[in-house]
Amino acid sequence: MSDFVRGLKCRLCGKAYPKQPLNYCEDDFGPLEVDYDYAAIKESIHRGKIEMRPFNMWRYRELLPIDGEPTVGPLVGGTPLVKAHRLAEALGVANLWIKNDAVNFPTLSFKDRVVSVALSKACEFGFTTVGCASTGNLANSVAANAAQAGLNTYIFVPSDLETAKIIGTTVYGAKLIAVKGTYDDVNRLCSQVADRYNWGLVNVNLRPFYAEGSKTFGFEIAEQLGWRTPQHVVSPMAGGSLIGKIHKAFDELYKVGLLSRDPKGNVKIYGAQATGCNPITAGIKAGQDSHRPVRKPNTIAKSLAIGDPADGYFAIKVMRETGGCGEDVSDKEIAEAMLLLAQTEGIFAETAGGVTLAVTQKLIAQGKIPRDEEIVICITGNGLKTQDAIAGIVEQPVVIRPNIDDFAAVLDGKREPVLV
Ligand SMILES: *Cc1c(COP(=O)(O)O)cnc(C)c1O
Ligand SMILES: [Zn+2]
Image (tube, rainbow, N blue to C red; front, side, top):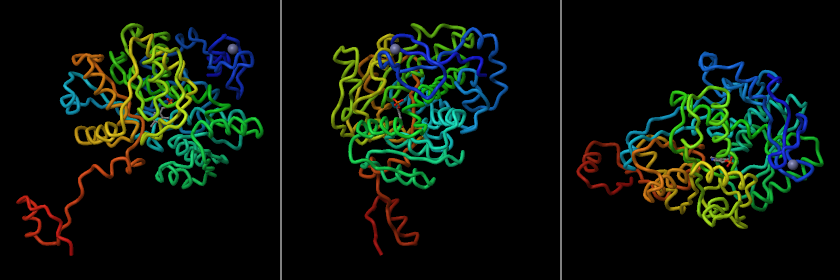
């Protein structure tokens, strides 16, 4: 497989680098990206070959940057693409799908995709200690996958994280460092950590490899639709990486001959954020080329709360070039959308899912997404991790004594709790 990766190259100036744990170009600080030999990949794969492999993210292995067999996260990916009939009816649209990474293995978010690539690569590079800067889901995923791989782990997070995401990290035996500051403070600290210690930090010095894992989210959408792209995709944005990789995924599938129709001009990609942390959507709405940093994020969508996103510029480029756009929504809209998704489709998504659905509703209402076209909503995390966000607006249980009369009274509409 190593034959297919030529090395790394700068996304700004194109300068080539060998395969190594490095994320920035030394000339212009542009982010580095994996450079593939697409002609050779095209020779080597076809639909039938992929379809014969187990349904997980590694069935697209030729388009992922590891040299040998995956050693971390061999079962990640392969999540459902749900045809959402009841939600479609509620939104007044004809064709709607949910790509549901709320049930990704093993830590219930799309981050398992990026982590399995980054940690498999970390093992190839010989790192024995790994880590990350995280808004929560990445912490869970690095901790779990590193435990399975027997790696030492240091995880850095903002100290105001949800309890479920903290316990969902420490349970795996990871050292969790809670930093009093924003995600951007945490990220800066991690760059210094990567410089001082010889560790593999998945979204710092391993970032070019890490980011490639997100493509599998897009590969699966296209394959599950029958090797074609939908007309509209709505993606949440934190650092702005996933949205660009969904676009890259569609583009690559066409390049290597797996799609019959060029996605260019046929799929519009939209980015979703919370109004309480909207650097990317504020940037695109203001007509800027890059994002508008948010100093103090304030939203229940903590997994998306990155004030100074590393890929803000590229996210805006993707939205603009595909004919999509960006939009943001309030915390109230986020919580209500979480309930709507749960009550129409039986899918309990985290706050980021509420962001994506609420933004989709807004774009439909604005007429930006036509009601008769095909829409895919990207659900990237699980609601069991962010229960506080909706605890105040879900219906409370009716408490009764264990007798049939009490229950009959409830059915008759006398719902007052009878406390014993
Ligand atoms: C990290 C994350 C995202 C977005 O990730 P980026 O690639 O940084 O934009 C979306 N949803 C959830 C639940 C996440 O944890
Ligand atoms: Zn460069």
